Image (cartoon, rainbow, N blue to C red):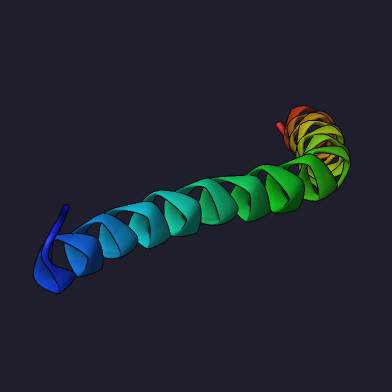
Length: 60
């Protein structure tokens, strides 16, 4: 039989593992949600850069 202290250690280990899985899960969900937004922002910044380059060419 395990002592209460050993049981507590096992419980803590399981809790920590569960917490890490949940944290990873949340970061994955947030990442997935952010991905389309990030893609849109990249498209916008590319367009903005192209526009700025066009303007610069016109000035020069």
